[in-house]
Length: 350
Image (tube, rainbow, N blue to C red; front, side):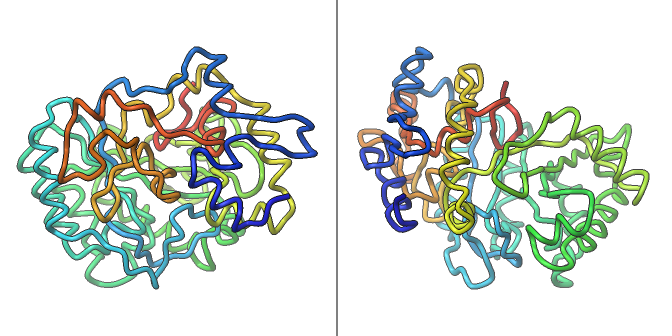
């Protein structure tokens, strides 16, 4: 099997060795491009430019085992206000954009986070603003304690990861004490109306499997989470999104270290679903890196696979026509988004 360094290198190169997966587990060559071609989807093309997912930086107050961003307190990469201004320029001019999805790291740790949210809301009152909040940031420092009220004032939709409704499984993935802090943060969000019945303040949770397996049925898991969290802790939320762990960064390290890499890839390949492939998020979403470079998705961003040459590759060079005509950059890590019911930042796709 390839070394971790070699796997990361080939993942980042669409023409690299990982583009055709050779493994004694498979006993055959496997190519994501060939699967797309068999589904009538190659080359993979955008359908529209509807969602901006903006990474405000890799700084985070947590160090989660499955984090594909490799985020943590020691990361210094952070989006500047100048790059934010370039993003705002495009958000104001592109009427097809209906959602701005702010992520990190912990996006709230960017010193210009609140300024950006307020600028987006004032310039595009109609647009949906999503913040991917890790919950514990609300309790991390007194300057973050009012985040629930800030979110409410600016009509921000909150999406938060909660690996499970028990402390042991949550803390094993996200760190000691994270479960209890997450519950307290959820209660504070509920207290201002988030996730409550007859409220328009949306609070969604994200479930990632704790090991080398695919998530279960999204609707069934949502029912279970809702019942357990309400019965045990009095917590309400709107929807649960199931997201498959993509074999890159820290999760790839775990797969290699635990000798689960080949088995996990085999599972992803054998679960390929053409319907999920047709609905992958990269067809209507663009990922903007903390430095302003453009990527087909958040996972490609972490592999430094910029959008295709010929399309505008930086937000300062924005050209919607070239971006709509581009071919989406793919590699075999993309099997993660097309396995089973599919996976996107908004949950299952098929």
